[in-house]
Length: 258
Ligand code: URA
View (cartoon, rainbow, N blue to C red):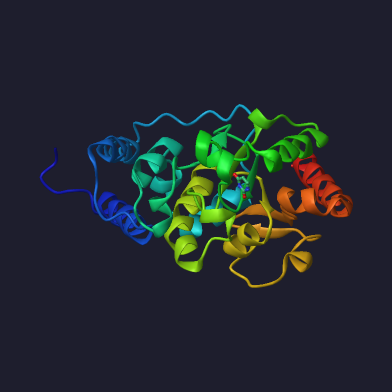
């Protein structure tokens, strides 16, 4: 251990801890210590680069835009570390009625991430996202663009089921969305597909209706973001599938051209 810590190292650690504080982490549990040790190793240049079998390399614009707001050390952490930091979350009232936290599932190097609103009854029972009727439709949507569910990553804005499947309230979104941000920072997808209003408004930080957010390509920290209707809405309004098909084709062509 050197007598005088490297000032650049201290600066990076400060950024990392500041980011943790901003995302609601105010204490460390033993599992998180392993993350800190890995961080220290990475800062000493001992960390091997991550392999990304599903894509060649991240576009350079993506990396630099992510770097603007998320410290490199946070980007280089893992989904497991984010899950450990979430812990047995009690940050909002949704914890009271949940059976399972539904963190997210899928390929850790996915090029495409789907973000829904929050778990429903079946997701709460199984601890997995989009496994109910809306989930079956999502699987068909994924397959319609020649992808498999296990190639993409699927998560939600809130990780616990809102009672009666109501829309998550502002305090619940505020408590939970930093973990979504961190999942996306780790995943660094090329394309994010927001399923429904809550996901689109949360990530884009706007109040615009979904009908005006869809049909365009937005940007979120260097990823291209497409908003579309939620599969649960499609189950109630099948004619809207035509517009969703247009959105899915847009996603397919974004992935094909990168
Ligand atoms: N609806 C969502 O928004 N997310 C799920 O995981 C399931 C249904």
